[in-house]
Image 1 (tube, rainbow, N blue to C red):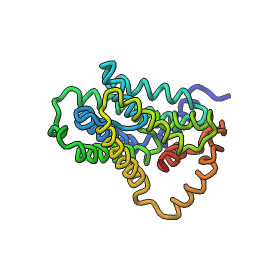
Image 2: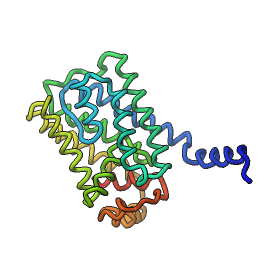
Image 3: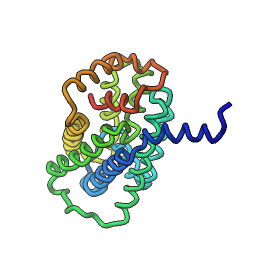
Image 4: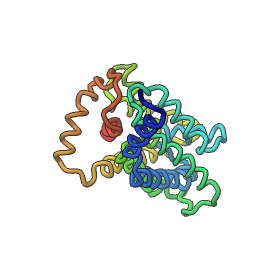
Length: 251
């Protein structure tokens, strides 16, 4: 019979491999970069993102609640919707990024804006904002976690509607941009599309940078059934915490 001490040792050894110092530091770096860009560019210039980050900005505008509060609440809601599809490892790694992102949002809120106001230059602001978010999310995805609840939300939608995972991501992004018209002028939404495009390209670049073509092809073969919604119907936990982010990088 396994004693409590042995069980705790087993949990420790498993999580020791999952939560390496390098992984945690890179996740923290990613969340620091992303929250800095959101605070110093997106919120001040009235441009937005898709997915959960865009929803955070939307609710922040209409409710006045801090992103440091909204971000973890929305993440937890999305994780609850698709818990069985993501698996414990993915949830645990993503929890680190969720807590870290909220903490850095709170940190940047304590200081005046660091970057100059780019409201008069929406195109450079959109490109720069997309770069901050793209680099941040790419770093987090490389560590097998999620920068927000987007992955969980997209998987849940894919399962319910039996659509491709990429289309589920697109649907969430477009929905958030549409709702954002309630406080952002149409012209600024056009710049927000630039931001979403730049961040998407950078996410893919950072996530796959330095990986061999063989690794990329292997990952693509593993994801192909998931794109056809097979993964959305699978209730088993992923073999590794990088499986869901690999699917996310396609979008």
